Image (cartoon, rainbow, N blue to C red; front, side, top):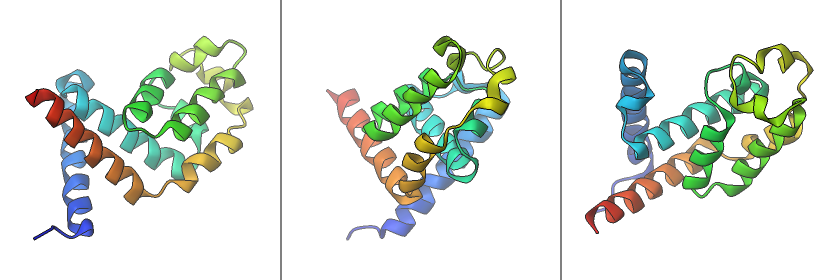
Length: 142
């Protein structure tokens, strides 16, 4: 018998919450690579869907980490939209430097990229994470 999707999503969100707590205590490096991908994408989606990529840039994650996570989850339109925001900085390399990019945050207009994130529901993201973890588990068994 299949587990209802809502129950699966609840379990996955609970697991992601525990991973976030571990990261707070021990750092992102304490997670397995597939866990890092999931947590980066999940956390960023929550921030961006509420407040936009401008708020993501106020955080610590380099843009390349987010883009890599979104690509790993096969969320290519989001990865492309996020990557395009690097061009909003005077030097695209600033998007990967959380400290150096801060002075430019007030001038950023990420509305176009934000729209792409807004269109992805939390359920779709959780489905993408679950599918990625299944693929990762199969590769680990090979």
